[in-house]
Amino acid sequence: MDLKSPISTVVPSLDGPVLQVLADAEVGLSGRQIHKLAGSGSVAGVRLVLQRLAATGLVHVDDLGNSLLYRLNRRHLVAGIVEQLANLRRTLVDRLTDEVGRWRIPPVHASVYGAIARGDGDLDSDVDLLLIRPDQHEFEDAVWETQVTQLMQTVVDLTGNAAHIFELSQSELAGHLATEDAILNDWLSPTLHLTGVPLVDAAHQPISVH
View (cartoon, helix red, strand yellow):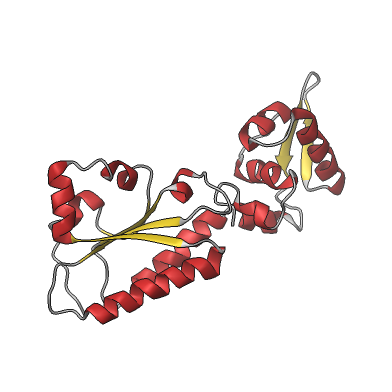
């Protein structure tokens, strides 16, 4: 999946980025505004896409005299599918949250960072996840490793992208926090929280294992 433009998985042409912009917008936008936000093609190419989509009824065009504003027709039969495709990043986060939430040994903290959190990357980008495991000797390492391995496979199944998991214990995280390790910048901003406590609190959070 293209992590910058997930909708392009199904709509690989310029239509994909244009529909992404329209699905995210709450007001009408000019062709130039849509081109800038889409970050693809040319202004002329974007306008051709908008004209074609308008002909299908999926896009409404408001004529303001000296400019045309385009907006997604959310009553169109296809609009719901477009919105679902435009929200694939959020859907991925929700699916991962659901899976990690069912773990027998819950992480102290779990989040997604890197390309998918920034909204950039491409087809070859990894899905980067940060997991903070509890500092408890009584839990079985095999159970934790099985959970992590399954999570990595889930990422591949959902996106086609490889998962890169950075895993730390609570005590290891405390060491990074104490030294203000530069890698914390990657983990803290931007990030998409999955489950557990905020990262800055994770080093000292008591966790019970069921």
